[in-house]
Image (cartoon, rainbow, N blue to C red; front, side, top):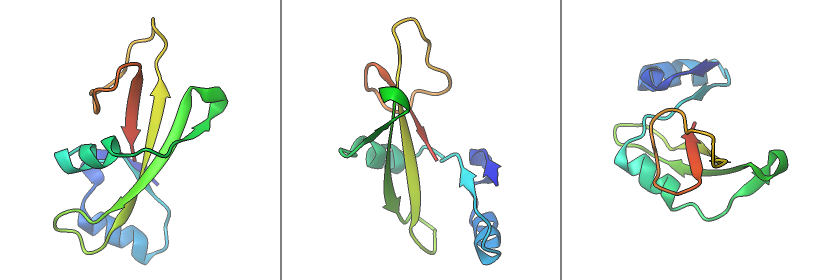
Length: 98
């Protein structure tokens, strides 16, 4: 299942996990999540070098267990405009956290 950040609620996560259903939910980008993503130093290049991926695990406040977050870093070409909210202030890149 794929969902937007508004679905990042404990009850839904527990429901999906109890049924062993796979899911990807766009992360709610709190200061903590942004800081974790900004501290990543190991990236794996994919798709011809324009994209790289990394991950971290964190137990957010109010959560019963830690969960994995995947971060996608996209190299932005000069004329391409970034879409969505600016997550991290790294010139030349946009980021998505799932």
